[in-house]
Length: 110
Image 1: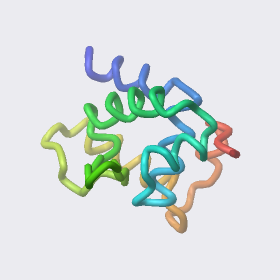
Image 2: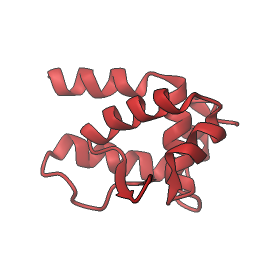
Image 3: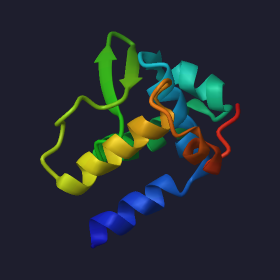
Image 4: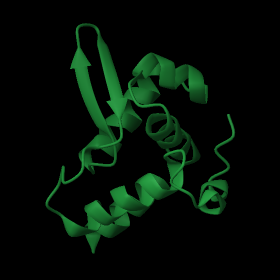
């Protein structure tokens, strides 16, 4: 139950939801690009991304001096709850997946 509460708390932050929207809809963005996209300082984006990556909700890939972000690969976790959260976020934020009504809940317009 602690994991469910922790993940829900992580997703209950407007900046994190806006970051997830950017990451899922534009895979391969760098941390700096995400910071500009959501108008949040670079250190805060790094902190938020590390938290989201810890729950397998985003994937980060360091390359040189940049860190690239994307939706996590399918089956990147064995935890069934986190897999379902990944699927839900894909349905909400990946273009063409449908269910735009759910995406409006987080008011992600940037």
